[in-house]
Length: 397
Image: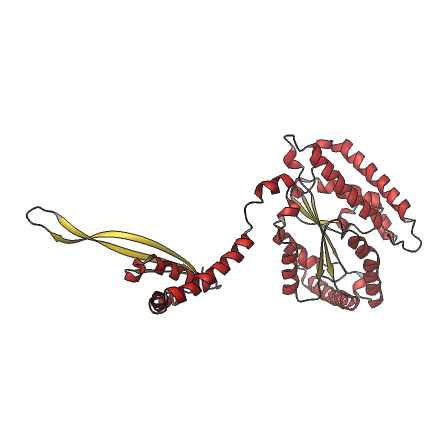
């Protein structure tokens, strides 16, 4: 059931208005650029956050995680027209139709063809309804162009709703801290003449204004984003944790989910190929089983390989620890047994190394028959064992 805020129009009237607004904006856009050119981002990450939750800090990190090269679309920056500035200066909000029109126009830019991070939308119930209709139109476009040469421009849309959240007390503390940092920064810029002045927001200096800003977010923007939870991928991030924890949570929330993001036909074609995570998990268990079996079934060989690693190889690895790579050549006869090579590789894998073995065969002259001139040789087998691992993090020129 839709919750109606005090003094707001009834929900059904609001949704009706949303339909009128969206259809008017969509028709104008279609008339201007042509239906075949309505090519929007495949993936949209709609980023919302409480004041002081670290949206600015984490936006670039989110782009990095998803491989998005385009700058974020910040709605407040789009609303720079003289009309929009006049409305905002009077303390009002720019109308939903103007916001939607500017936003859809911006998303048609080629830079956003694959993915885009959207900051500041939706913020009202009308914008929420417009977003739903926008998604539906993208799905219809995909179906319409699915069997045409332009099909690759109309892919399965994926919308992520990501909310960075802090409580009221933390939000106020961070806003006021930002105000102090802004004053200090601007004073330094003014004194030195070097740098760019940061915006000084009234809410960053007055606890009551900061509290009102938080409550406005909680009562309007937050509720609007939560209302989309049952429709799109929804990610709630507790932003009060240390930045390292927050970013790990972001990574975990945005892990790739091919069954949800790929075109159903593409997914059906690929689904028989196992996921890397599944293979790794299974391989780890198989590695454990193999090592245990060596201990039981090839005890003497297992011990000899361990002794060889400790005595012959680890000193070399330690010597080249900075580089992350070490190579040992050996004619050790225990490796004539293929099981010994398998043991060596598995031991290094279990210890976090990567081992690679090349076998080189050389014919070594032993004697010459002076009467016939025939040269007798023996076959020399050299095992070249290369170990890879994480080297030193220091700069190496």
